[in-house]
Length: 99
Image 1 (cartoon, rainbow, N blue to C red):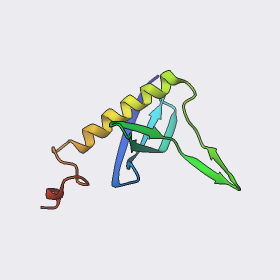
Image 2 (cartoon, helix red, strand yellow; image 1 turned 45 degrees about the vertical axis):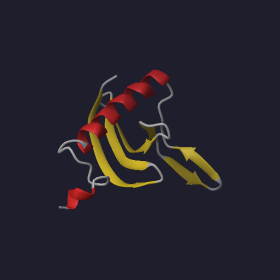
Image 3 (cartoon, rainbow, N blue to C red; image 1 turned 180 degrees about the vertical axis):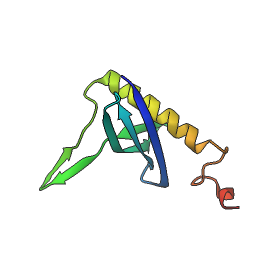
């Protein structure tokens, strides 16, 4: 499945959240508001959007196949790492970024 037009929006890290991502899946489905979160043992994982309806937390969408989920995660995290390393510094982790 083609995963294209990956957009990364880094955020000031908070509770493990480091960025939001969006992408187009299969040349026909836009997926947005996907969180990129640090794993406790290193690396990153994706968190798909949910909505609160009454007392329930409902998933908006998420991959139901482990294979597809892995492909999306790999593509998005690779793009995230490219973005934060474009100039060799991460603006939220490197105090010298402001200088």
